[in-house]
Image (cartoon, rainbow, N blue to C red; front, side, top):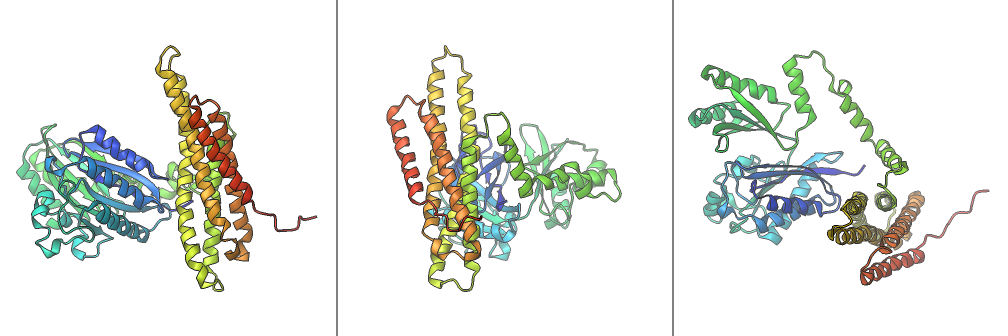
Length: 504
């Protein structure tokens, strides 16, 4: 499987659903992005978006959501209980699925530089990406919030951003972009309105107050519930667990006869943290998570490339309409790009390669990574387009909107395989010009990559043809048919001649 990272941008908007949805859609528009969770809170006036993305497109996705948030959110009119300094307040990259913290640091730098340069938003690198030790702690970076930073930046040399202008963006503020490991956002609601007690409790349990290690804590008053909330962040849940936080708070709550009315886990939480809590609370002896948790064993099996491949192949074999030929075209295209990446990567490792050829091969390697991620996105997009058409068909026949929505869905169902063919054709064109540079050790893989891309184009074309037949917009139908026929012609021209003698 390819390298993915988790992205958890926090936005200073938790009430206007239309703005939140627009930001989420900005993430979905980037190839390879899979949105996992959207957690919004009206009291905090904040939304936490969680998505995963291939390493190749993760920085683009973070830029896209930051740009959309900057267009929609004005910090001058923002009020909420959670500290904030930007429309997109914080944007961490987190390693998962074979990616590393080093990958995430590089992504933070790439995204931060582009945000500062193109959006004119001052960017501070934090946590593992921090270039300044004082900026490892997010609380220090965000000190003063939007209003305080607006007065300080440009005057205080310690507040000069890592990227972007040395002045606040008038509406979008500033932001922290970083790389970090998994954290737990854990809130505890208390049956009290005593903010002075809560302030003392927060100071007593958090690291900066001499309390538990790897713990941030802040008191917040929830207007909608008329009670105090202890908002905590476990920056290393293996050092300080959820159970330990609750036990430490109980030492102060019990003498005051203050009860816990409920707790909240914000965003996605690792299974390990919850399992650890259960094991600690139940006092289970010699518990082995890797062997005794059913879901963990299943996930380990299914996350292997063999397991994932088998799932998709078996899904194709069912009588369900999706996934079908369009999704298969996307998979073929992605595999072609991946094989091309492997062949080029191994070639670049060769000591005998002409140095003059290396820049072009490196550029193609990077380009194939982007095309692979986009083609992976086409797999699910094709299935979703067919599902959209089936939903339109369910509209009652006497409803005048039925025909309009069916035509719109059919148009989209033709556009997705056309996009697949376009991406595969671009990748094939790139591979076609580098054949003379490929190492003999991976020549068969290189040719297989081209075969896969040819197959992707032909399979995608079949789906364009069948969907175009039902379009009433004949001008559009002719346009896409002309485009797909062009890709087929190029495919014919770039076909790989068989270079080996057939075995007897």
